[in-house]
Image (tube, rainbow over all chains, first blue to last red; front, side):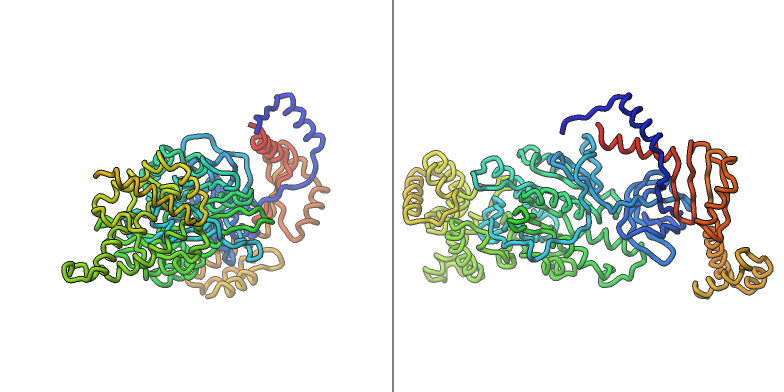
Length: 514
Length: 120
């Protein structure tokens, strides 16, 4: 947008025009006064024409949000910090339902749920006003989820594939790598965006930080910046020191921004990190508003809080632009308990979950995916044919390995086929490990899984497998570019492709040294 | 006492449109501390609803014609005139929780806001 300037002469001319045209139309404002103030909630009288979810302005300029309409009072949560508001101060309605300004310039920026920048750069004043609360797209407006969203994490892309428009929950205890999975997915989208082919669409990202430490958000921002992913990402942050109202609004602001891009036909990935803290913030607000407390002191509409948010993840039909929003909500559990109140709520809303388990993490399996309890309800529809052909094989083998693993302690007393299965399972588990901030392109994922699933690593010690994989990738990039291009198309592995993979693998193995 | 009961007490405290002191004494003599607080709050609200505050840049502008128009718009209300030179021109009317801005000052403020929004 070009910068518009206006001279003082033009302003004066407009003013003179307004003076001659001074009409009698009245501007009406609905006002009220503070009756009670405490715990970031204001009870006000007046405001008889206020509507639910309307923004109000206090006399010191602080904004508030109407969350309750009573018979002759109105309950308002403060959206900013104010130390000078007192009983009797005036409030006026703004006529605006709470919205955030969305624009392409938001990419690369860090903002709070009201759109105020947190990265020290200029405020974005012009753009489309996107309401924070909107009704999700209807059934007829959607289309089937059948386009993969590649995370670059082998275990996820192979066993728990995610499609564009899906909701996939990331759940686990603290410190197990939930945010790492989310950040790696964002980094992978940035890598893919830079190497798009003709019929591929880029994926923009929105990372919503709810109740996080500011140092954590700063670290995520820096990681994304170093990986070249920040230019495709909007970070919406309501930190731990922000009010409960801002933490409550953060995910809705994030999805409103995501909807702006989706309505332009873009594919968007949104990460809510995390919805547990979101539930805490909503509980706090509800208790202060004296709403009846239910199980674990949560209000009765705690399920609705998350369902209305996650239903806005959608894949729109082509008539409406074909854009999509893929949601990766994060939930923190305590002691791996996925049967607690909030986790079960969100599990029942989403289209699958990626369950990270602490004993797997502690035994060195990272990402600590519990393949048995993780699922993607979209499944193979969100996988390329290439990945499907290698992943189908290892799913079964891993399931059999898990069943047999209990017999591992009787190593010397097992028959040959059981031992072989155990060894294969160990190698499959090892190949699915992946360092952080290192998402892989799909062709290398397929190659890695293929080589293990077809037994080419049965004679490689398990501890050497990661080194084998790294060198194998380097070898393929140097000597088998055409093969990698074929795998990158995602087409089903033909006999020729399999033969080429076999040839390259055998050639590599001859020269492989530990 | 419930809020509705206190509301009825407040209505009974009026003779016509004016607050009757004797009635107030009689009705409130037996009220508890809590009910008296509720009664006073509702009474203040009722009084506020009865009044219309009209702010003018110069009080002398207010005349019989203006009074007639205001009484047509706000029947059975008490019209209170205030002087506020900052309005420049026009008037600002506050009726209960509605504020009707018809002043030049308000127009200029809106204009400034629009210019700030549209131009860098």
